[in-house]
Image (cartoon, rainbow, N blue to C red; front, side, top):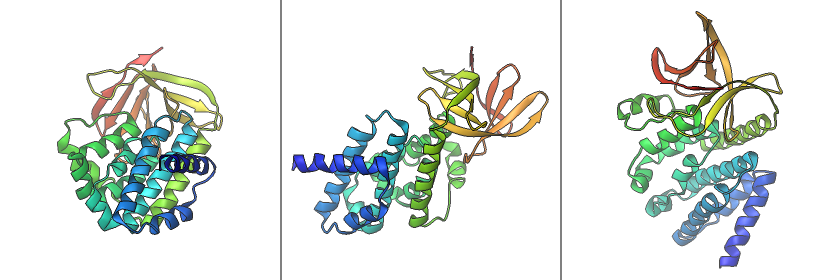
Amino acid sequence: MKKTFYLFLLFFVKICFSQIPVESYRNEISNLKSIDEVSIYWDKLLEIDQNVLLSEKNLIKRDSISTSLMIRTILMFEYHNESTFRLYKIAPVMNMAHCSNSNSAKLFWPIIEKYKVVINQIMKNYPAYPLESISLNYYGYSLLNQDKIYDNLISKLQNTFSNEEIISKLITSHNNFKASHSLKKIKTIFKWQFQPFKDIKEEGFFEFVKMSNGKLYKRTDDGILQKINLISKKDGFKYYKIEGEPFGWIYKLGKNGSLSLLDNDKILIEYTRID
């Protein structure tokens, strides 16, 4: 049994690195016949998350694995709804928590929202935990103890995509992630210390960089890229927004490298520049 399980892992990793075979996933998941088979499959997905995804250092390979896990989770809910609710497996929550592709995490939100009852049975902290994943993924900003704004943020994450549309968009998101992370860095514009809380700085940094396609990106110290777009200039400041970001928050950049994260006129974070 153990040998079979690790062969499953090796096969999964191999196909993730080449392509994402949605129809193969659909066939194997639709053919699960019993609650025990469904339970074992969930355990396999969690094992991949814990022992393959988290140990993978290559960003593109890691995103491929993450995307495949999200797609399989969607199909598991689609084909084994009742069984899934009875099992209370943790794998769906880990999909979002360990996703490094902010756009994909946003796309996956409706799955978390749709099955929030069972997910809350698992974690007891809906919507705090998955919302935190979205906010940290996009902005490096923590929502800890900010319960009053949850409903407003959730309203901005809603969409009416079908499962098939979400799956298709997840594949596109992975392909875009792969394309952007194949670019070369031309130069760093400015660099700042990582700061998820208003009054607490943490180790690490992020920077605004120009890449080989001539576009500007926000880049974290572990190499994650997000395209940023200039939306306005005023009084010597430039205002940037992360492409596709969900909450409407913007970066205010000064000529001397000062940087703030804004929610309308409210300053969420004032960052410390690193020379």
